[in-house]
Amino acid sequence: MAVGCVTVATAVRLALTAVMGPTAPFVTMFPAVLLAAVIGGLWPGLLAIALSIAATWYFFFTSGTGFGSLSAADVTSTVLFTLGALLVVLVATSMRRAVERLGEAQEKLLAALDVSNTGTWRWDIQRDIVEWDPAMVNVFGLSLKKTPRNLEEFVSLIHPEDRGYARTVIGDSIKHGKTIEYEFRAVLPEGEERWIYDRSRPVYDPEGKPLYMIGACLDITRRKKAEERQSLLIHELNHRVKNTLATVQSLAIQTMRSSPDPEAFQSNFMARLMALSATHDLLTQTYWESASLSEVIEAELRPHGGIDQERIKARGDAVRLKPQQALSLGLAFHELATNAIKYGALSSPQGQLSITWNLKTDAAGERQLLIHWHEQGGPPVAKPKRQGFGTRLIDRSIVHELGGLIEVDYASTGLECRIKVPLASS
Image 1 (cartoon, rainbow, N blue to C red):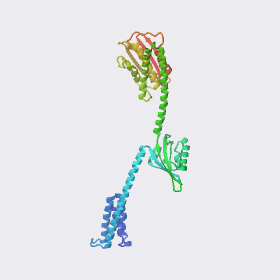
Image 2 (image 1 turned 60 degrees about the vertical axis):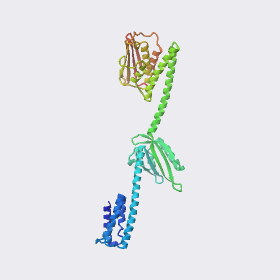
Image 3 (image 1 turned 90 degrees about the vertical axis):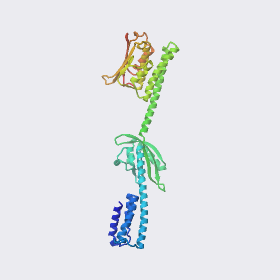
Image 4 (image 1 turned 45 degrees about the vertical axis):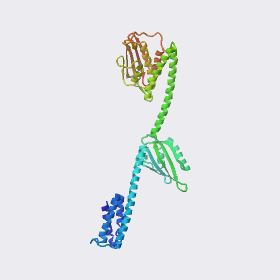
């Protein structure tokens, strides 16, 4: 770099000798030193100084015959060139480092803006020219060729329902000279909507005339979706709490009516509350989105020894239940298990319980969940003379709350219960 610059500078100075004569031999060396320092840095600049002095001495001071004795003028011009060239090199190197640091800072800023989904912009109010940094392109999902050039093109990116509000806020900011913060929806080229948060302020000249407005836009789509989801969850939670309280109230009233004494009421009511709580725990783990049927069955049979696949067997398709389906089926399984413990197969050491289920699609294309509860090996079974609360609770849970069907067969070899639930029901 330094050698090339000095070579060209020397050739140019020699070409000018016919016009300038021997005066100002270093005149073309200063640009060579400056160029070497700007492009290469400190050491190429210092090398260019040394080569410039050597070339000048050889071609102009000694005329190619040797260095011999130099005149005072030659020595003075050499010293002045050296000092001036050193100053040029130091200034150029300092400026070069400042530019490098500025470039590094800009790269870091753009990286930070890109990671945070933020972009900056500038609007020249007098000339109506909009300038975006590269990060703004990502915020609005545009290409560099489609960035807005004026205010109208920028406003066209805003959702039609939010444009009037954005114009009003911007106009009010320019009029009163205040920093503004507002949110709006942007419409991407593919039709996708994004929520944008903007903070900007106007800048004025000494006479109070608005010159330009600068600002930053932040993509807050995720935050907005999270807020919407939180609001939906709170609404859903309120709904679920009301339903749960109503269920508990009904369980308390009906259990009280069917219990012969306070001790029986306490025992039966607490058992049903625990059954309801077990299903609640499963739903809480998935933020009340769904629960696995196999987990619901396992939770309700856990107080009775759990599913060991020997005395109590359970198998079936992978099924996810909606919250209301899980709660209703959980109560139904609890009542069936309680009945099996008191009067059915689980009241006998030799008794066995089998629970199977599968999914089928009916003629209308709707999915149906079929559950088969089969007891055997217990004491003889007979149909009860009157319908107890447990039976009514099962019927209410399956038929009235889930829109399903239930068939109970009091076979002498063991109770069989077949449940059909449409999974489209909520």
